[in-house]
Image 1 (tube, helix red, strand yellow):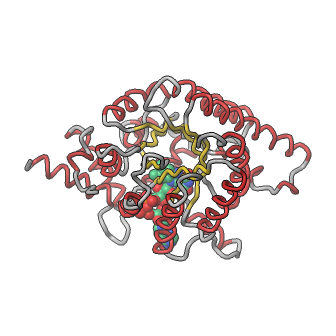
Image 2 (image 1 turned 90 degrees about the vertical axis):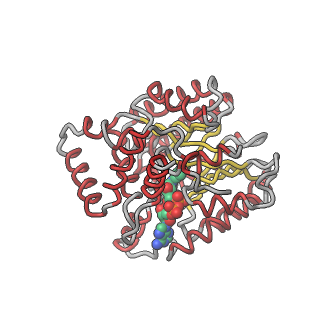
Image 3 (image 1 turned 30 degrees about the vertical axis):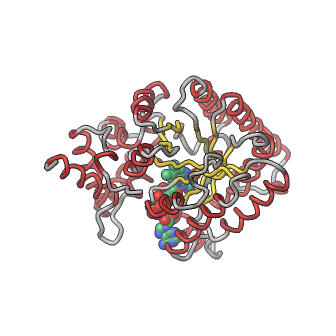
Length: 382
Ligand SMILES: Cc1cc2nc3c(=O)[nH]c(=O)nc-3n(C[C@H](O)[C@H](O)[C@H](O)COP(=O)(O)OP(=O)(O)OC[C@H]3O[C@@H](n4cnc5c(N)ncnc54)[C@H](O)[C@@H]3O)c2cc1C
């Protein structure tokens, strides 16, 4: 498939929107400015400075659908017009108190209620650290006190209420992968829910980060487990978003990094994971969540990719990878956009990760900026 058709990729964007996106991606592309901008934003946030209005008129609308679920509906309907599914993502992170976890849980239940009424709201996602204390997730079962055991049970109950509603609303629930030192507890919850709710059809999906050295073999074991126990394995596959943080921690705490030792190894395992999932179409439902053209092409060339019985979908983040999303939808594939939302101040960590991801690597112009510039040029000389 040819993903270079920027006319299709940016058909939903006006000239003015493209020019604005071009200016912002040019800023991210400059590593010095990017570092300065992200540091200044973090400091302003800590100092309690009112930076919301600046972000609201710049980077926020580029990567987020709005501050509330209702504000996202315009974006949802716009994407639906082009055959694109929306994955509403309440992007509030790093909460600490029980009442905040309950607020997040209620927001997810509201999304699911809403999704049952809109045909293009077929997926939603959750970060376990949004409904559980991070330091609780760091502990092994044997290390939990009696009070922490009760706290863990409340986390299980929160997730169970969300999964049960996802089943009743017929909405796929993607559970994000996070830092390696809490991921075992997340996986424990994911498998508990898949065993309970994925008997008939794939509803609950876990996430496999292929920048980890151990994830391909973990995926193989998980497929065997699903076969033996008779449930659908829902796999969202990503490369992984915390590479620097993981490597820094391993260095600081003097343990061998769990990260792949090269970019090539991550790419190799990502594509091998796709093949493994598509080779098991009766057990695995795969969502290839990536902005990498080579990996999407790899999935599409697999012999099972186009079979009607294969559960295969693709996903990109709002504001990124439009050349994949729009061209895949145009060709009739199942594809969704993650549309994050939440109060501006609360989604800043998410915005910072997106700015960093779009910084120039080895002096190259970033993928998004190149595509946007190509489309601006094409519109000038149609
Ligand atoms: C829909 C969606 C959902 C997502 N959900 C999650 C999630 O739940 N958890 C999560 O962690 N991330 C998640 N991500 C983020 C995702 O991991 C990043 O967007 C991603 O890392 C970019 O990967 P890509 O496949 O687009 O590939 P590219 O942009 O082509 O590759 C960049 C990635 O390659 C890897 N890499 C780069 N250099 C090296 C190196 N030297 N050694 C080893 N690996 C290297 C890193 O993972 C890096 O991010 C999600 C992304 C999407 C699109």
